[in-house]
Length: 378
Image (cartoon, rainbow, N blue to C red; front, side):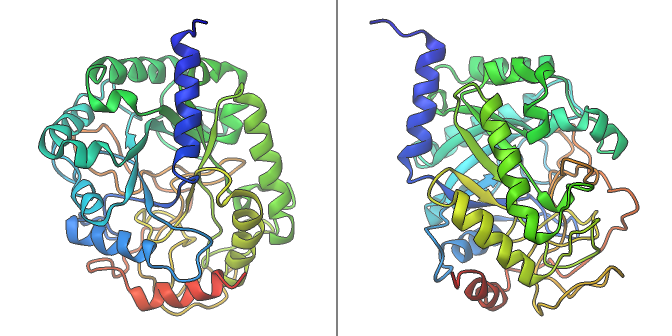
């Protein structure tokens, strides 16, 4: 019996999705909330904190990165790679593709990493995402929300082919390739070429931002389920990984959605524990945020408190909002992908004001542990 390369790739992706007990992890940007670069020690502190969360519904030993380039360098490998090797953290890698006509510097950083670290690095890589929400940025909704410059389907497919050609004789050739985007981008038939080109689908979904759909916390699980099932329906049998989801702990209300710690716990229980954890690869947003251009904050606060519509928020161990959102959510940022060679640019959400919190040191582990104990009391 002969399998086509497409079928073989699909099987490989399914095996990869199931092989690691359905990965659990967080997203991680390349900078702090003040846009200063994160280095090896900073990533190590972050990864160790994630792995050490007591009472968690599984081992958070994976991380999703948005870029392979060290912040503010041209094509040096991001120091998260070294931190991952030291902490045995599995890697969902990302190649930034918005606002650029090539991914040469991303590929150069990857080639340097493979040469420098060898199998210690490549054995930890569980997936490769070519792009993040590029289709959303170029959509009607993304344009309305001033989400920034994205990329069309043919551009993404070209980048996927470029990546595969570059690493066809490399250990990374065995890594399943995907693309990350919003659920309504995947259900848009004009983007089917991207679905055809990948091994797995990455979906970012935030019911918090689903304005006009009854986006209060009581309805959040229903909204997530609809979007998730719609994505699965559009995926043509390919595995769907949840690459971003979460509920903010502070900031301004969004339509009926209120950001506070109690609602973040309810969302964790209803969406994470009921629907996702240990059932599909899931990367939660977030342990520490790195995009300061949004009023709502997803990272663990030092002093948890209920937020209100006046936009007040507690001091945070790391700030920011999700890199973007569908269904009327704010402009798409890059979560710290500030290197000058990737063609990216941090985008501000409509009406948001950049903030500068204390992000210059290692993660405030006691604060994280305190909230984690609350979240994990299932």
